[in-house]
Length: 297
Image 1 (cartoon, rainbow, N blue to C red):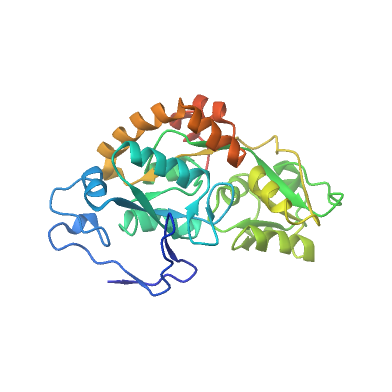
Image 2: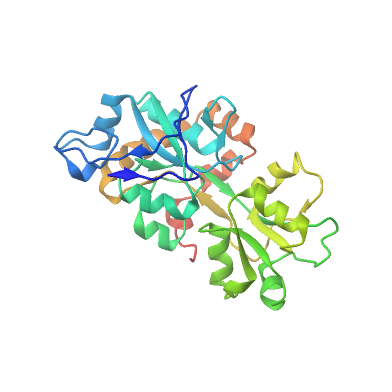
């Protein structure tokens, strides 16, 4: 079948070429369960498939520092870089990335449009019930992007709950939207933003009073835009964290992946990668999937 990829571009890492035509995703006649694009043979698991074809397909966002697409099309950012490094330890040479909305990542994974999600898709109860995460790769906090001086004094989720007049921009299907909905913030107070830049422009133009996003993502946006400010990490929401996401049926691969991930997290290379993207390597080593999957939403 044909997959329409509006707002999604197939990017192949390490200088791979962007494809603007629709991605064709057809089930392999020998093994329909493995889905399209991978050419899996009957009975072939994900590890064998990746080794044979030399890559795995991943869903990414374009939200630095979690994921980033370089001008030459290279897929990078903390999550894809970690995934690529661990895949190499497993004997898989590279990755191919497809940009997708957060709300489309799990449905696309379970429809076999990609083999994994490496996008900073934060763990929470509903997601952990649908897919199998690796152990954590990144751990983060949440903040609000607000106008200079924070005129509405928005510092916590409780502030949003108390003031029904506030309008908060959130990325549709994102973890932050789920946090606020879980705190019973009415849907009419939440305004969908398609990406980080859009959310900030909504605040600057007055359409939204704040933009709720991971602290590191807002700090990255603030590097090139000084017309808004980032609040201190919000104290009444849980710390967030992500790992790579896989289909429930790929448990064997996840087990092998976690073995190599643990080894990689003990290396100086991991510490350097985390420092490059602004994450705390030790926080990643201490966090567990079981802990992060308890997050409501």
